[in-house]
Image (tube, rainbow, N blue to C red; front, side, top):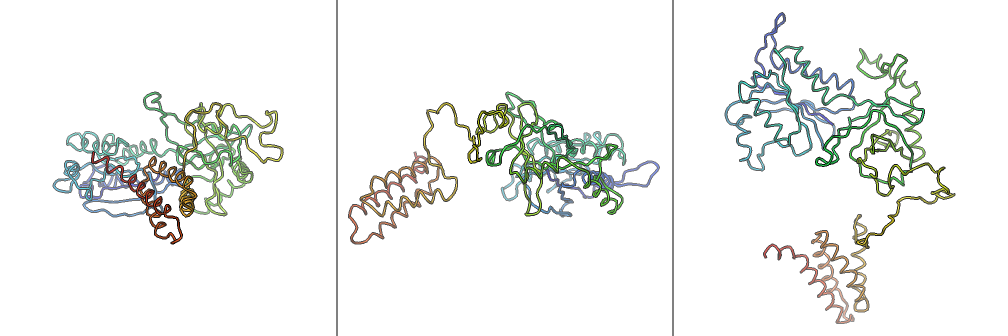
Length: 463
């Protein structure tokens, strides 16, 4: 999850902090020291993490922008907890946030999924002596309760600031390392971004589910059979090369570029199952089904960023015995060799998927579905072709028109009805002099009924 670091550089952050046996520090110096620790950790363990830095006082300035847009962010607010006084202060903003107009709304809750972590350059006693802690907790509550407040334990010093930022790192920035297994082959990998715990049902099963650190491949399946399944999240699977002593090779911060390049060259010469798996899936056009936990699966596949670059990705399915209905229950899938006959045929020209339900539902029927614009365009063109052949095609014309009308009302696609009505009126004006008189009558009648149907919601509102 990308990170936005927001640092308070107001006048209160320049308050001095006396540290015995050392030079005098200001609170902003302690904040910079903690942020340096956070950024160094991310540079070592979260090399793919994107971070933006914003500083603010009465104004704000974007110091380091993102290089791309994101839908989900992680916000780290660094402040001393001083709320300010007067109009524009945090205390005043919180007191009046319900009275603001939409154009001048309070920034919380953020208009995107996020977590808000507040790093206070103050200890708990200092915040509790005023209403600062209550106001900061209210910020978390306004952000749907997603986040946490961190304070300095003990006196304000570099060591305690490091300890506070260490807690943030342990909570939100610990890399997820796992072992990828397939039979006797294994590989140490890092899953990025780190998978979040998932709650299936807050009422029935409120305990969050976490994926195993042992990711075992249980089988392989064609990409065409898995299609584009619904997933909870997507992650990069990165190999971690280990030397004989068990230490990581090619990871971490080195003293200079030459040492880093040397470490990467060593890592590139070590055989790795993760690399073999990625290449095999890419060439064969298959995905690997991986066991994430009890009755929880995902898939590993190759995804190309460009013509020359691709990555090994892992997508997480929803927990359950049957996450993809067209494959059936995961526990009942097996190797082709166990089947009496090859389910893909002798020439691999057919597929056993999707599985057909054993019992036909009583409500199963042919319904109109417009997945692509071309499908809707075809239905409209079919109506217009029959309209030009009235009155001979009257029955077919009304059959197709009623099918489209029924679907449009079901979807709430009322603009479609008005648009088709306008088309029928235009067709009526384009009829040749030799056209049957009944053709104009049928087109006018159909257009009026469609316009009547397109305004049904207005009549309901009036009632």
